[in-house]
Image (cartoon, rainbow, N blue to C red):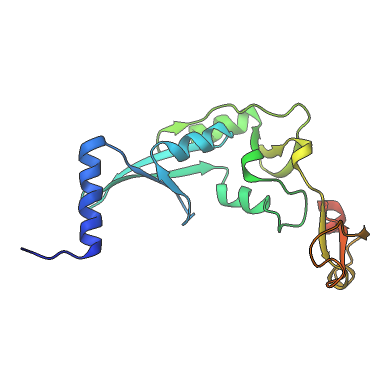
Length: 190
């Protein structure tokens, strides 16, 4: 009886899975931690308004997967809306991409691989969280935070507008936490 390494067994199982149910792994280009079973990620991103190119690949060992190339860059959008970013922040799931029609058409025409895109349902009065050329990542007003909590000393050092004492949060007194205006204009004028 021959012995196989754990990696060899995993590879055999992946190959077996491909032949049995045709399922493939999807990965987002440039993002290490984002992956899922086909077409989980494509549907998630397309429903939020990203233009998603699907590069279907077969590797030397026979393993098949799909590498996604979204426009705009998912990394740039989602890193810009995390809760540690100065400026309006919102949960990733709340973000929708609003396109200028010409820019979306240009992104689709420039695609090297087959594209999927679903026009997302946009909020009635969307707030722009981050924007690029021909697109904006928007969210419903109630899901966007423009104020942040930080240490008073850091806020003063960076010249940020202090709005008052922080709301009741853990260690507020211990660290002298204050609420600051983190809207892009206020942050950019420091």
